[in-house]
Image (cartoon, rainbow, N blue to C red; front, side, top):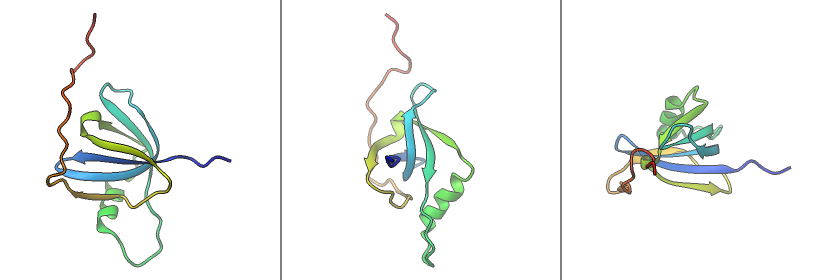
Length: 107
């Protein structure tokens, strides 16, 4: 049986760089958005707790699907295995979006 793909999504949100993992990434139903479903968080049984990952778990608790604006996404990678989700400061890591029309141009 084929293993489900794992995607790493890195995006900017309110001056922070978010790195999350999910099983599904699709073109959004809303124009200019990417749909991310089946978010993945580690289930570690250790005493060491990563506060950044715990903050992400709390922020996305109960979320089945999220829509991320295309201009906020830095990159989407299909990876071999899931890493640790985290939030970090975007100091100097902000990518300037390529100018795009706000709506499709009709001929």
